Image 1 (tube, helix red, strand yellow):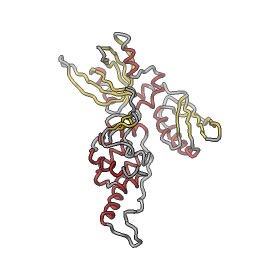
Image 2 (spheres, one colour):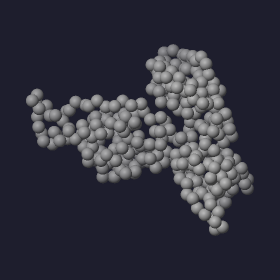
Image 3 (cartoon, one colour):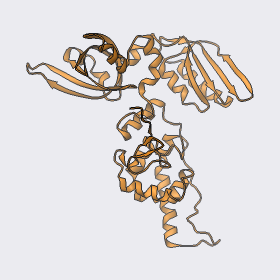
Length: 348
């Protein structure tokens, strides 16, 4: 429909769905296991001003009233990103934040004054864990668990280039192609959402597999001869490439699977010749070196050069070709994107 959907945010969203500047604000209360009333506690305090960070949030909102489950879902969905962009850190420090919040609100409620004349509600911030953020694929999995669908990206985004080089279509592309012919055979990629097993009137086993790709949701019928050998790669959250027959019945496209394989296997020989890594901070180099050293041990048929491109505001781009050949698979690219200071990665 062309209407923007803004992700949940404790500094911007409402307990229920709302519209702002022509965009839909995803409701905090629509997250799984998160009640509208608990979110009203947050937005009522936010009326005094946006939260400056995790500790400001914990000091101003009694997190005990919000609840552990709701807080976990906020962190997993990225609703705390405005307070700290490291979702794993936000998730893992919730216990410490709740304890800090409880102490601050208990002291504030009793109006006790310390020996120095300050309320102990101004407690020193406890030390928080500083874990490395979840990998992009794990961030999306956590987001999916909280929201119910992929909101900020899709697991197949990292495979876009290799899939395109292999001639694998998106669901939207296949729909357009099916509209121009009575029946079409093609390859299509998707991330499994659910598998529903059934029996036909003749007693034949089949499954309806629900999947998604960056262009939408779709369903594929899969009979036992395809289902049984592919069962391991059809777990929810796994990404696959399917060979399908597509037919259009009215406005609905029917898909029948003829083969299925894990996406990593399907694109094993389709990665780019190399990776170009753009960084805006030279301090990212040591972390990149550690990850590349670990990647050398991976069994990958796709190896190639890696170029490091340093972006500085006052100088032209500086591109450095690293010595040797490295795995250049989507998994490696995804791992490198986690490094702080990495702006963008492209294959060439």
